Amino acid sequence: MPPISRKLRYAALLALPLAIGVPVALSLSGQGSAVAPARAEEVPQSKGEIQLTFAPIVKKAAPSVVNVYAKQIVQSSGSPFADDPFFRHFFGDRFGSPYGVPRERARSSLGSGVIVDGSGLVLTNYHVIRDADEVKVALTDGREFEAKILLRDEKSDLAVLKIDSGEEDFPVIEFADSDALDVGDLVLAIGNPFGVGQTVTSGIVSAVARTDVGINDMAFFIQTDAAINPGNSGGALIDVKGRLVGINSAIFSRSGGSNGIGFAIPSNMAQSVVTQALAGGTEVVRPWVGATFQKVTPDIASSLGLDRPRGALVVSVEKGSPAEKAGLEAGDLVMSAGGREIESPRALEYRLAIRGVGKDEKLAIIRQGRERDLVLALQQAPETVRADEQLLDGYSPLTGATVANLSPRLCEKLRLPTSQEGVAVTDVEPRSPAAQLGLQPGDVVVAVQGRRIGSARDLHKMTGERQRLWRLTIDRRGRVSQLMIGG
Figure 1 (cartoon, rainbow, N blue to C red):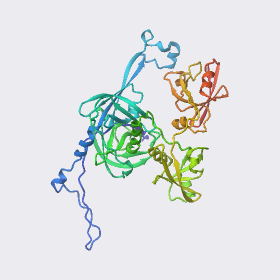
Figure 2 (cartoon, rainbow, N blue to C red; figure 1 turned 90 degrees about the vertical axis):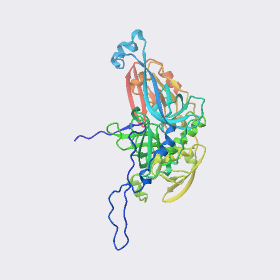
Figure 3 (cartoon, helix red, strand yellow; figure 1 turned 135 degrees about the horizontal axis):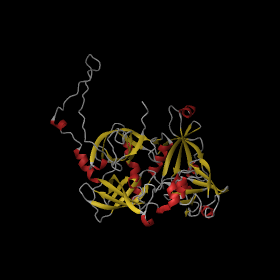
Figure 4 (cartoon, helix red, strand yellow; figure 1 turned 45 degrees about the vertical axis):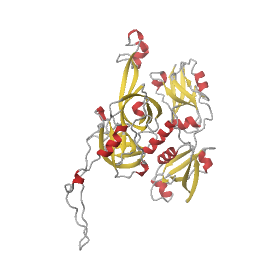
């Protein structure tokens, strides 16, 4: 049988009726016998057992879970050949469009969200409102409102919306401490799967602190078997007290539907994003450490005398960084942060992110076999050089790319090493030469025509000149490519 491909798919809230299990009784006997065999399943023995239900906590939490409708206006030529580079080369943007005027069409997406503040702040997934021009929020009581996007954070796949209304009586969900969750805890998921209407499903926490999922950059997820399906993205994962423990974000699926493996962003991460939105932030600011870390392998764990692989191994420390000032050195092994055990570099990044800028964090490390405590000051990465963003509009293959000068702040935002040289790509216009070249945000233009690029302004000037042949050096996450392109 050929292997079945496995795909991570974004979800939305949950869909399937609520199921409640029947208790199974075990009998132990201490009178002249060993442990007695388990008894068969029993029917409910009392009226109270028959009436057990999750309905009270659903009634408490469900009004704060909303539907999120996002609409994006896109330009369309109306021709099936419009995106074909061959036809565009000969006919340009006018091909297939009467009088050269492109037609507009709306592209819609459906997701879920959670009201987290009485003023009408709604937390949802970034991918639900990505590139949206219009956003609407529908409450369970039938009210609909326009919403503004206050904050987008692609790294965590979270976004904060503000309901456009003078009212401030919106039902609000209570946050719970997601660090208090244990594997086996009962949870419910609420959302709008497939657009059928608000639905509740039940399950348990299958795992906590999942880091090797590959959904977003801030990988640290709650895994649950509660059914999550398309349309549930941004919905609530709640505990048995009706409190928010996670934002449903993705599923592991072979078919596109729920296979019992869903992932939710922990409420502690979500709450840190909401706090910054309430403070007026339009983007999430995270602590800058100024060090690189490596996952501990079984071989490394054995060489360090550890019983199992865990911790975050320091690979390098930048000069003048908070890590250097705290006393971190290459070869140190970070074992805990704020009293919480660190299993991997991702876990350390998560712990520092939810702690937030402007605070200190206590790190427990092992250096040359001896335990030590350090205090790391959490601060924002500095902007040592002004970004000076430039839209390249000349005759080069880079036309349509927006580039900026590198600084520790931009490197942190784009997840680049601060030692990186060149000019960073921060945006690429659709259908531009840069887009056709395959350029992406986060790419770094190192050299053009064999000359090293020192600033965004220098690159803008160089690409404004005509060339018969363009020689480009592009660095993508450490992989350097030499490109030769005709002018």
